[in-house]
Length: 193
Image (cartoon, one colour):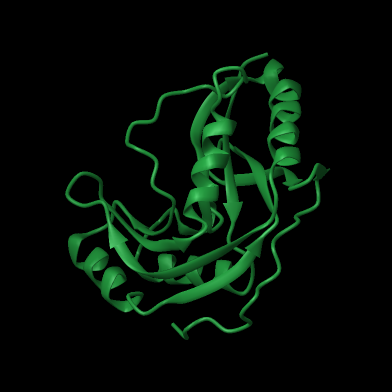
């Protein structure tokens, strides 16, 4: 049947997600519109397409064991010089993200894999662009703030066009749906960009 490239992440809800995606595009990141704004739980992973039902069952079980938690973003960080990335920092909710990503990649499930770098929850806002543009992203978003209650995560598939599309959303406590289910913003205003 072939393989598919999957990823698992927590979507950054509106209005924050679109704002950060537009800023990422504005910094010149060509991947900005193909990648929804997110916190990664499983990086791009190639999986035999016949395993998709097992992947979905596994993620439903992970979500069933989870509970909603507060997420807060504040300021910027970078992985440079190790990796050409500037990100908005996860300053609350990181421990829950770490717990989730370990269970998503658990050795008993279909998504077991080693990570290239130690897990560090974050929201990428610039990747693989010029140093000047990355410096600009780092500076311009240094005062950025957002918070919401995270109530779900989602499974995405990367298409041949390099665009990531949501397959299913998994709500904590056991809900699953093909319809996006994002956490409701706690603070209706983020620092203007």
